[in-house]
Amino acid sequence: MYGANAKPLGLRTLRVTAATVLLALLGACASAPQQVALDPKNGDGLGGTGIKTAQINTRGDGIGGTGVVGTITGFGSIIVNGLELEFNTQTAVVSDGRPASLQDLRIGQVVQGIARTRDGKLTLDTLDIQHAVTGPITAIDQNTQTMTVLGQRVRLNLGGDKAAADAFKTLQAGDVVSVSGQRLADGTIIATRVDQKHDDGRVIVRGDVNALTATSVRIGELNVALSPDTTVSAPKTGGRVVVSGRMINGQFAPDVVNGGDALPFGANVADVSLEAYAPVNAGSSGPLSIHGVNITGAALPPGTVTNDRIIVTGKIDGPDKIAAAAIVKVRTVVTVLQAQGSARPAAVRPDQPRFERVNPPQRAPERPQSVTPPVIDRPAIERPTA
Image 1 (tube, rainbow, N blue to C red):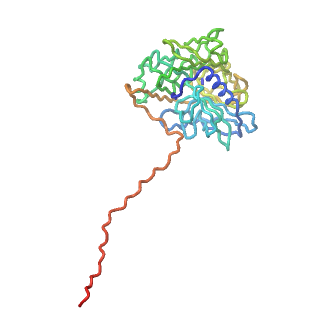
Image 2: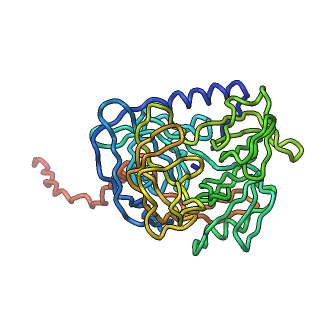
Image 3: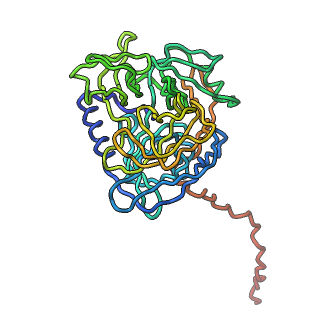
């Protein structure tokens, strides 16, 4: 629900990294209520939104910060769920458990972060770039813009984005891609960004626990074997799970299995802004549950149907419960696909400028114009007379 140049990590290092990220996610505080317009301000034609207003209650009593899960739709600050999230040199950034930087952020990525209020602005303490799946394509259909990656069904909606559509046509079975996006109720990933990447031997999948036994966990159509050597945190029925590993002779071999609660923020986070798709019972009056998170206190907007994109704003009321202050429908269609490889180049729409400070252009020194030297009248030389 919710780069690729680093060297593969060993099991012990991955476990330490996972623990470090978890500890970082547990710290936060915040300040006074502010009104936030749900307007991603993407400005690049890649997406849109229904502009409505929700309230984020960022408390100033040190009890907790604001947990955010959603899609990056713009920069300046980092725009997620219509919130303008500031950052500074203390913002800790990881990507799928690996150390990363703000320079690795891209429009369309799904991120999880914890922010607190500084000087009236939400400022990120932590930010985690979370790909839904990274691995080889096992099946692809250019006509329906669908593919299967590591047992996960992926659907794109490229619409009239010709550059992205042309890039998608260059992909083929066996290519390794990183897919950003969130899941429908049936587990299908709706891609908000797809990047072809060089195969560094590491693959990853994150999602809901579909089925769980003492010896295996199922994510989408992928069955993952469980063992004491690979399980850092045991998956839970109805919870989330992240699995990383390698492909050996065409088969997935897990290195690390890390289960977690449906709400991943820890006890010290009070408020939440959560992007998701409306569940299968969206049109009914029954209890509202989204990927294992139980929602109380606010109803879906009138006319909401299954698989509408929504943002839930409220307070965390337990490891799997949100007391919602507001639920709004939004329209976010952000699919940027970058294909790599000199053999199959693809034109792609460039990302918006990000965080580098742009120095003003330096003017070249002006060359002095050629000037004809003035003619100096020399006095006549007087010869002495005899």
